[in-house]
Image 1 (tube, rainbow, N blue to C red):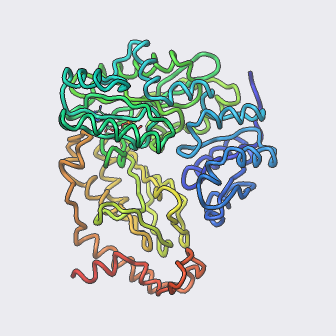
Image 2 (cartoon, rainbow, N blue to C red; image 1 turned 45 degrees about the vertical axis):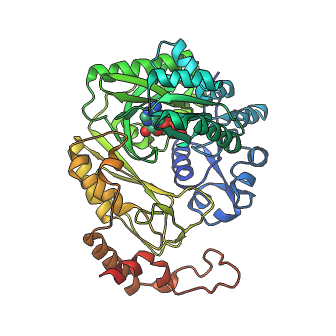
Image 3 (cartoon, rainbow, N blue to C red; image 1 turned 90 degrees about the horizontal axis):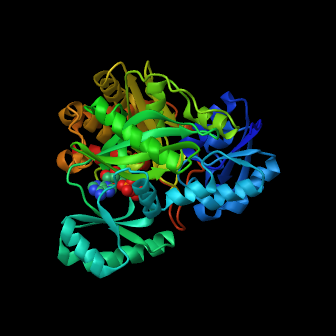
Amino acid sequence: MERRLTKLLVANRGEIALRIIRSARLFGLKTVAVYSAADAKSAHVGAADEAILIGPAEAAKSYLDIAAIIAAAKHSGADAIHPGYGFLSERPEFAQAAADAQIVFVGPRPEVMAALGDKVAARRIAVAAGVPVVPGIEAAEISATREYAALVGYPLVIKAAAGGGGRGMRVVAEAAQLESALGAAAREAAAAFGDGRIFVEKYLAHPRHIEIQFLGDNHGAVVALGERDCSIQRRHQKIIEESPAPGLTDQMRAKIIGAALKLARAAHYTNAGTAEFLVEGDDFYFLEVNARLQVEHPVTEMRFGCDLVCEQLRIASGGKAPEPAAPRGAAIECRINAEDPEHDFRPATGTVLHLSVPGGPGVRFDSHLARGAEVTPWYDGLLGKLVCYGANREEARVRLVNALGEFALLGVTNNAAYLRDIVASGQFRDAKLSTHFIDSFFSGWEIGKSEIDAAIVAAAITAGGAMGDIPSDGPALPAGAERRSPWDDLKNFELWGSRR
Ligand code: ADP
């Protein structure tokens, strides 16, 4: 069962590609990056031993092109593929294509991925394993669904069996909306995922999102590496994650971990995975399994002092899952995104004109950003993950507030000031956590004066330095448009300046 790996192709981009390349190197592997035409100058391309252009900017023709990636792996002589997260990471066809090409896929087997990737099938596996699920029903028949809805009561949430990433979810407040919502959800699901199957769940009023990291090996062992609380979400998408989950009793933790392990064993799971749960009061309910490495895995690494990508590589080469060490302290991560929190979080693009990266003990910044880097509209807007460790939650939290204060990025509008206000708030300090945290406390957020001043100072430093070495060949401009002064890219600076 042992297979000595030599060369890893990383089928991803951005911060996660870079993070995987680092661990692969530590594990003694040569690395191959793949990239689209839009990413020719990206950090992961320069970081790998080899890099192969796989297609144009459109993800469908590059990072989602299974044939192109398998061809790149064969061409480079890679004997393993790590899919990262997003893109092809949870596509059984990709894992199968790798297996067909005699290439080790760093992740679960295709059939396991297929069973768990379908939310309805995953719920069935959970029920069969004796794991509680959110009360719900497969919404094939409208009359049966209506009856069930009347029984469990509103609000309800409609989900796509093939959905993910917060997409394809629809909350229904009352009976009158049910029928049209079901129709619309099924149509949307068919269009977005090529699979119109939907199901309905009770929409819990004040849940917390708590998930369990686990690792399964090919020798039958499955181990858990604690929990992460990912309750701080915007529109059902995580923005701040932490471990341990504040206030979770040891008894409750043990129950949820036990359920996750039961499920992973029932699914014959191998490699890294995460079981997600909603927790409300003394009850917990299985949501889904993410059959891959997750964005927020560093909080677990910081508490357990491990490298999950190395563990994935060890398991993929036939090694055993680790005996987890006892966790220590607390870790909190926030996701810095290219988006405008003052304008409904609309996606932002641009060229990085200035970047100050926080540092010091217990501070980790996983990012592909560098001065001159371009943030294009082609891919998701995750710019980096700032993760702080502390002997306890409060130390980790204060470190994160300070680190976010040190973080300065000009040229790409981002949510760092927003995150800092959240992490600095009394509500976050007091761990008033639920998935409605943002709606309850931060719905009408506006940037504070301190951030305006800090940004102006940072802009002044940049302007006083070498503005001249900003790359001149930035993102392509629409036909007829003129390249403007770099100051035009300092959107917030202009905006804030005009407000003072
Ligand atoms: P996705 O796979 O699209 O991320 P999930 O099922 O994992 O969808 O849910 C994402 C988030 O949506 C959860 O963390 C939670 O905040 C919210 N959510 C999902 N299902 C429910 C539910 N039944 N009740 C309340 N909130 C829910």
